[in-house]
Length: 343
Image (tube, rainbow, N blue to C red; front, side, top):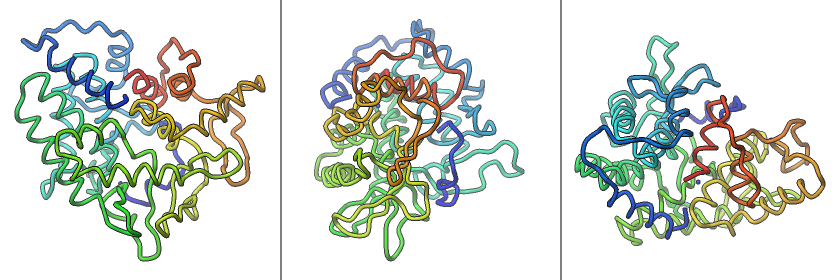
């Protein structure tokens, strides 16, 4: 998505170890796949689907002007796959490719705004959305024996590797999008876009020679993105040298609604050690008998005067073993975090 759009303050709208990923893939391959009238027995999924997925397959961000974006579409696809809901997966995947798919490359425009005369006006992509779309399509192609989904996943992986990874500062940097992030003096990254289970699946099917260096440098950038007294990642970071990483200049230096996904994907992707400081801080908050704040400024230490959403609490539960909320939130992004933390 466009850099200026990405850096605006967010509305509050804004996940497997490799062994778990392989087990999930195996389960997908062996699960019943004949017919489309499969029983869907996950009430959390059906509630999320019925609240946020329109009949045509558009995932609606109800907390952000009812827009849609490739990120949300990707969530719908991986969650439908997990629930075994082939009909919903097909609807979401079709709308995503038909509406957001770019004609010049196998990536997706980041935003659909039904309020605008041209709902898809910015062709820039959001790399996290493309990562999860490709991951979901590859697993769905295996599970439901749909070669066209497997082929599309391969095309997206190839496009991400060719267009969204640059060599700079002796590293392979995974850009948040095609345009607006690589400047002469710095590269702006979003550590929450490092979707570890997707990247591990890419490496498994394409080989470590294709993705190994990208994964390694994403891990190193995450380790370097530890700021302030609690050593927390910020939503956005600026890279100015091989080991020179700082909160992005001119952007709120918060561990907030983007960065909450850093521990989410680390926990789901079997990399809890990458975010140990996050877990330590969350435990310290609870040890002080106070709620975990929704965000903290990693420079000044200023904290939100309200607690994590149900989605954030679900991420914390996944990382540090607390009890996850038992009721699905009505807010789109919070509910999505709850669902992703169950992967």
